[in-house]
Structures are given as structure tokens and as C-alpha cells.
Amino acid sequence: MAGELTGRLSVPVTARAGAWNDSGLPALDLCMLLVDGRSVTVGVSALPRQPNALSRLLTGAGHIAPLPELGPEAQITESRIVFITAYRAVRVTPSGGIDQGRSDGLDRAKAVTIALATRDAVPRVLRSARQTDPACQLANSAAERFIGTAAQLRRDYRVRGALTCIWGTYDATVSIVEAFNQATIPESQRVPPPRNAPIGRPGYYLPADGELVFRQGRRVVRVTALTTPPRVIALDDLLTIVDPLLPLFLR
Image (tube, rainbow, N blue to C red):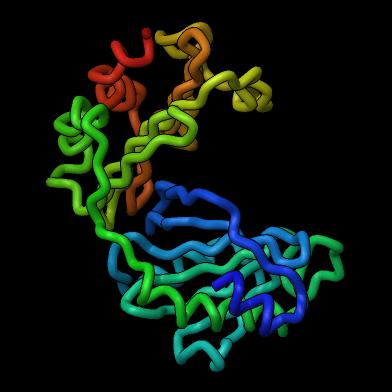
């Protein structure tokens, strides 16, 4: 797609190596393009679209306008474009917005061109809903007990050796994300400060975000859970989910 866009836009377009999942609702498989040095994140729902998928992706997006070039459900805002293709919800997000006059943003024409190329490419690159790592299987039972059913989505992968485990359905997502050599825990700087958690050195619990984050040696581990409708995720639930993997993080 990057080569095709270079021709369409008459500016250099490259794709950054690697892909990841945001463990949201809906959970999006993400990749990043560099369009003449400006970053654009493309997200494709890992599960087939649901009727409310686009409205979820538009939460907090500001003024919304139809974008008929990309289909009857497509919408454009000052920060993103969302549409449906191949039964997947897609979001295209330039880092500097759309028509906002920022040096890292894109004008509407370029953003729409990228979205059109994405629409054409998605059917060719769809991934299986199940991508598993044996290490994550240790926490599978705890994660599925939390979401209340067998996971419809699994996204397990490693980034430079650091493990990510994701379990999801249309109504809940659970993730455990490991990071190496992270000098600080940004969540610790929030005002008011987060609650301390009885794990790690240090560990914090952020109930509004459904997140537990802690340092274990050179690792920082984040455990998050989202549900729809939203509810407060108990600290004990997050501790139970991550507990089977703790021996890995103590190495």
C-alpha cells in the first residue's frame, strides 16, 4: 500500500515495521504509515464489525460529517476517518489531524486518498482472529473467567522480546503488556496520584482506566480490562488475571 500511495500522493510514503493491537473496544490491529514524514495510524477491527463499531471509534472525535466517497456509513472528523470495508471497522488517524493547519497533519484530500487505499488493501491483509503465544496460555483461564466466555479474539505477540497477551469479545477486552527498560511509569505522575497496588516495586491501580501497572525488575507490566457497558474493574480481578504469568515476570 505504501508504494501505491507514493504514486497517488506524489510524496514519499513508507510503512513502519511491525504491527500491534490497541486492546480497545472494538480491538484494532494497528500499523503506522509515514506520509512525507507525517505519521498516520491505520486501525482495522480484529473482529467483524458490530452495528455500533463506528460510533465507538468516533467517541470524543468532535464534529462529525459524512464521507460518501468511502461508503454510506463513512464519517470524517477533524482527527480521523472511519468506515466499513470487508465487514471490518477501519479508522485512519493522522497524528496532526485533518485540515487543522498543523505541520504534522494532513489536508482532507490526502487523508481521503489514504483511506481509499486502505479500503482497497484491507480485504487482502485480514488476519485470523486467533494469534496465540504459549506463554499467554498460562493466564487464559483467568482471562476467560473475567470476560465470561471463550475469547473470540486472541492477539499474543512479542515486541523486541516483550510479551503482549490480549483476550477479547465484542463486549470485553483484557490485556497484559510487558515492557522492558522503561525508565519511568508515567501513570505515577497523574494528579491526583493513583492508588498503590500490592504488587511490584512500585505498583499502581487506576480504577477509572481499568488498569494495574507495576514494575518487576527491569520490566513494567500493564494489565487492563475494558467492558461495555463500562464498569469499574476491581483490583482483585486484575491481580487474578496476571497472577499466572508472574513467574515469567520474576525471571
